[in-house]
Figure 1 (cartoon, rainbow, N blue to C red):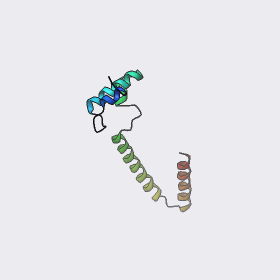
Figure 2: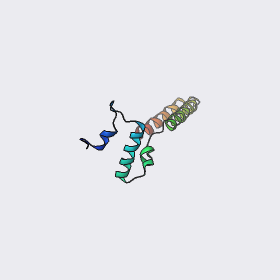
Figure 3: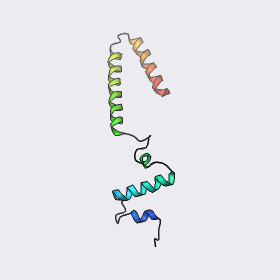
Figure 4: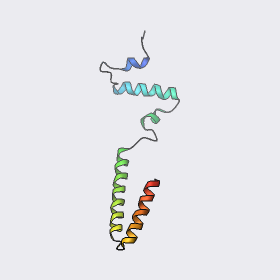
Length: 93
């Protein structure tokens, strides 16, 4: 006979779930939600650290390209206009 919820039987003394216990618990959660277990292991909205790093690198490259292009504009008035345009676009984002 159990005194608490079934999940408590999956907890170790340290309070941390072991890998097999995690799998069992995720299986029960998936069953309760009526979804495949795979959805809980790899949710569609999960952040992929590798993709995040790739996106940051791409933004860094684009930023450097933008700065190089900006620095090639010799007309000070045109540079101010472009800077204002970029700032306004950033505020809308």
